[in-house]
Image 1 (tube, one colour):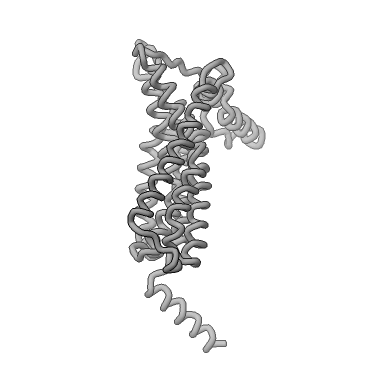
Image 2: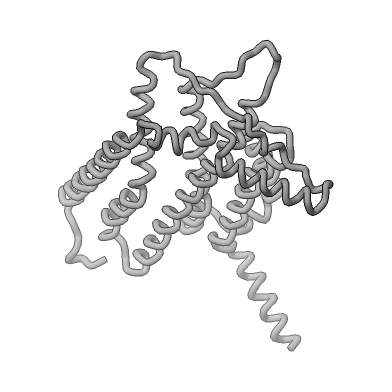
Length: 289
């Protein structure tokens, strides 16, 4: 950062105003485009949002083929739930007069937010870049890129695995045969958006850990010390996200979360004591040699 490039308070305020204006403009344009492609038999709502409601969803077909392959290898390996049931279908109904219209609008906004996420991150980066030194610019640029990729991976995991598994369990769970199982539109959309975006945010764990490490709040010893606690906590979180009793459904959520925990440990600094121990070990090895 050069002193000649310093900006006044009003210059920063003006830059922030234009950053917000461009971000809102891009978000609005994408929301209008998504809104126009949402309806219809081949629209985004039927082909993407409602896709997990039927048995031909890609994740169900893949699990069906996987279970059949395991059964061919050995009957003892066929432990997956029955995903080959072609009769699976979740019926979504609407009881509020304006619910479909408002769902159309809000869903268009959230889908546009996901699509414009890289551009919004770039706008944030462009706004804070003048305040950084050259070495900080390289690090922060990498962090923004990684955060964007991890967010999309998290949303994909939520859409293709977490939400379908949760929907399939809850939609097929029956307390009594006297109860007709139907799902309201509002309930379906709330769970869909919550699980997809929660997974997108959860996948930012390595980025958050790196930032906390940079400011000295977090170090690698935390992950070593609380690994057992984290395993229990992640198992509880996985059981809460997918309240199913079979171990496969639980593992579908648990292992990505635990993988994020271990990946986060690689992005944080070692504690000073850990660095000193590593230096002592190296010195000992040199003396012995």
